[in-house]
Amino acid sequence: MDDLGRVYLVIAIVAFIVAMIGYWILSKKGPRGAVLGTAAMIYFAGMSLPPGNRRELHLIKGMLQLTGFAGGILGVVDIIFRRPQSQQAEYVAVELVNPGGSEKPPAMERCPRCNSFVARTSDGVCPSCRQSLNDRTVT
Ligand SMILES: [Zn+2]
Image (cartoon, rainbow, N blue to C red):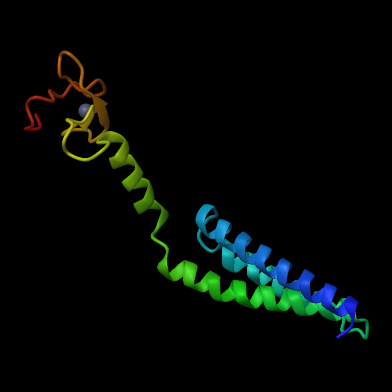
């Protein structure tokens, strides 16, 4: 392998690592299926490149297909193992209402009638439906 070949190899490895980090961020922040969709786009971009004799083209085409394939595996794993977004949102909501667990009384609670989160007010009445929060039986 000549010097230029070695340079290309290093570039290819760095590009692959950057792509993996990109997939990881997308898996954390992106919507469900974003990793798989991005991987498919990268893979088909690689497929659509014409096969050429030039080494640079070979490298780019090979890298795109390899990165797309690896992302495809990650994307499937991401879809299978990721919790649905609604569950995550529910968990965050509970944390906000009752931070740090049960030692502290929650600043807010659910209204037994309209089921909305309401702050404890001095009169102890739900601001939206006037249900008494001290009386847990729904009237
Ligand atoms: Zn209410």
